[in-house]
Image 1 (cartoon, rainbow, N blue to C red):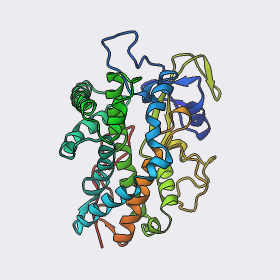
Image 2 (tube, rainbow, N blue to C red):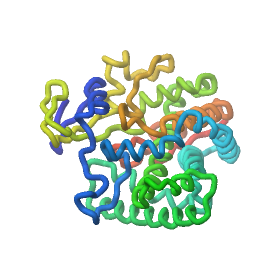
Image 3 (cartoon, one colour):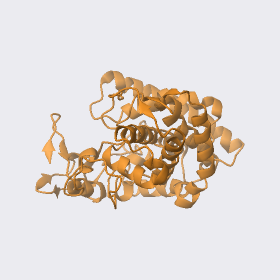
Length: 350
């Protein structure tokens, strides 16, 4: 445990981060439904504590069971094939491969019209940047504008789906009487942003590390192990914030009620107590107990889908371009503290 320059407590060990993520004494500690202030917008269930979190998550989780996700495999494989076949010999793999794959998957699940896909990139990137602990006033204004535009878009789409339901997830959610319109809009924004932003990073980080270590071909042989080690070694989500909901202790550190504590997931995944030789990219590392998807009641709802997309994408790329070469030794990263993702990844495909 240590204190950041901003005065926040930060947990870096696997033990302390695990406790922080699953111990009910720590949570988000906010008023996400705006009960104290009716003018406040409803936040997504990602930022809620029980019982609101339990109620809303249970309504959405049925679409992300392993059985439901496995039904998406043929479509994910088809999209992956189409994207790879369209790649030039020298490609920018973030914008041409890692980004469009999960975006197409989650928008098709929700029933977002294909012609609207480009609208979401700017909104999503802005909202992802807003997760950073140190939010500038300029970014705060951009975030608020993106939230308003995103919500207005989904309100219109929800009204359309209620009038003319389809076979998509949004149509199904729009028929759930327990969901208010505000809760449904917040859930849609969460699913679209969380449903692709982190998976983009998983795929791009995977290509980068496999190519750097000269083991891309392993993704064709054992994609599951590859994805798990990428998630541990270079997790898309680097940290998350919790609050002490009551007076508690984390290790030897007192955390009075209301104390904010950061769980540094990237550090916990490199804790030598939990992972021998943690700085080695080791595809033989089993079993993997990484925290890339969190723990406890907030364990990532889309973990099964993200894993499947990562496995299919990296396997297909390894089979198609086993001799892939990176153009830049140090590719650029997005300016984001919470989400670790490449801004671009230029590569030559064999």
